[in-house]
Length: 313
Ligand code: SF4
Image (cartoon, rainbow, N blue to C red; front, side):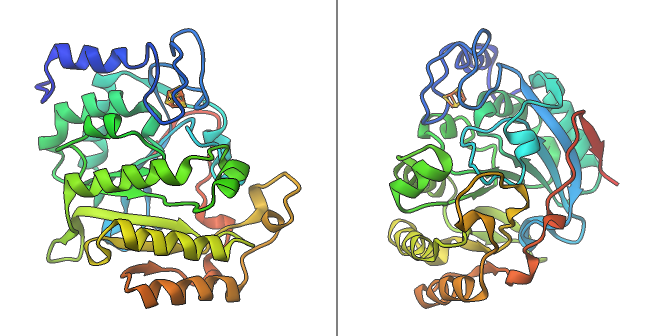
């Protein structure tokens, strides 16, 4: 397969796993012999590939998003709804060529987009694979990440990703430290989001309302944290042109996956909490997707199992 990156560049990218600083954790370990916070080795591991109908309409369309769920995560949020696969490495290993073949298979199934979920810790492998097949996919490539990413790694994706779908999770360092063990989350996410905007510019849609290019920033309102959510939105409005992006304000936190003792995380979000954050989003002028709290259900979380599965029907 022809690649946008030449063989030396691909090898240099693979060498990034030898002393891994791919994300802001900066573990500095050799992923062949040790594991960092993402628990991942030097080969991409995928847990599940499926057609998913519950992503934002502009990437989902009528045909669904072709979701590729990578195993492991560089954030490890204590309330993670995908902890079956984010906090354990389960699934099947793929090298760059196998990943490229898989991406072609997903695109050929008729889905509306190729939706790469929690991809950050495998950025070099994914960039190498995308560079081989990007021009054959014919659908937008979506980078569906936690937002805790480095500019150096994101730069590898230039010209390969059409839509960034990052989270912007926390304002306060205390909360990000408590919930995601990352006191510098906001700083790093701000840099990442600004860089994504530099690469893609303002949102563009096709005649069917599908996003062709741009950024959708996701924010999940957590129980007990509405003030932090409002601070996040205000900050986002300072760092990015509001009309140049879309906001996906999510309410579906469910305590079903949380096993700790944080009282807030043991309950659902109230209507008041969500509505007060949504009112601020509207006041600031954001456009996008703002779910009603009735969607707070575990049914929106895919079933994961210990073995790799693919079902694009
Ligand atoms: S990608 Fe994983 S090993 Fe590398 S710096 Fe991030 S958490 Fe550490």
